[in-house]
Amino acid sequence: MIHWPVPGKHVDAYKTLEELSNEGKIRGIGLSNYAVEDYVELKDSGMKIKPFVNQIEINPFLYRKNTISFFEKEGIVLQSYRSLRNGKDLDNPVLVKIAEAHGRSSAQVLGRWCIQKGFVYMPKSVKKERMQENAMVFDFELTEQEVIELDSLTTPDSLHAFEDLYRKCVNRDTSKDGTMDGVKMSITVD
Image (tube, rainbow, N blue to C red; front, side):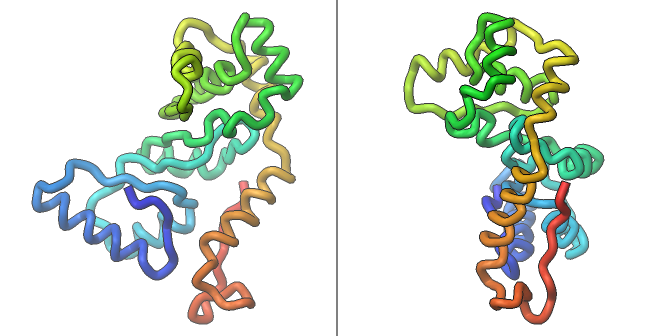
C-alpha cells in the first residue's frame, strides 16, 4: 500500500509497485488516504494495474458518501481505519442508545455499522479484552433506522475539519498560496 498520496511522488511510487507486481514480487497493490482527486491523478498517469483497496477513515462521524461511492464504482474495496475513532465519542447519545438496545458496547455498534455498510473493518487495540470485544460484531444486526441515525452523525463541521487536515497534510509540498508549481490543489468535499 502507498500510505499517503504525497504530491509529486505518489505516481512514481505506484509505478514502482506495478513493476514489482509484474516481476511477481508482490501480489496486490493498495492505497491509503487517497481522495478522489489523488486517484484520478494516478489513473490519468497511465496506471496499468488497478489498486485492490483504498484504506481511508470511515466511521459514522466521517462518512464521506461521495468519496465512498466513487471508489465503489471504480471497483476498489474500501478498508476502514479509525473505525472506532480511537475511542473518541463512544459516549455519543446515539451510539449509547443503539448499543443499549442491542446489549452491546458503542465500539461494537461502530464495528457493526462498518460491516453492514460493506467496508473492511479492522479495529485497532493493544488490549486483549478489547480485541475480543471488537471482533464480536457478526451476531447482531442494526436496524435500517439505526443505520440512518448513525449516518447522520457526520456533520458539515466534521467534513470541513477533515478537509482542513487533508489540505494540511497533502499540501506540505506547496507554497503559502496553496499551489504546487503554480497548480492549485483541490479536494472534493462530500
